[in-house]
Image (cartoon, rainbow, N blue to C red):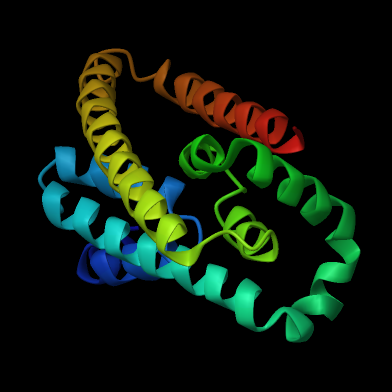
Length: 185
């Protein structure tokens, strides 16, 4: 366990960058929680997640815009979802591009759909950059605060060692239930 934690701290910034190219939500929250204990630098984590996510979303947009024919075999299975996303982007545009950053699972889907909807690249890039900045700052600080709260809770639980495993099971089940319910929508 100690070796895994050392590797995580050693390669954490690199992992966060590559993870944030696609989604990054869990990565930035985890990195911010590690930052709250002094293991990682919060501002570097938020910066890396920001730049990687802007780069990833932009590349997905370009992929959808210029390589549509190459993507077609892979998108065939999700044709209806992309059609609905295209309609929603034409209708809600800016607000959808901002909100999608905070919805787990949509961050890799919406940029391609925006490209298929013939959304203007410069407008997409500006909105995506601002939305990603908001995403990185809010999730970074939220994870940092949650890390401090978790540390306080675990310090209290250390006084009653028999409650800690129950609390961890409850926490894992809560997150699993939340993410499974949220991703079904």
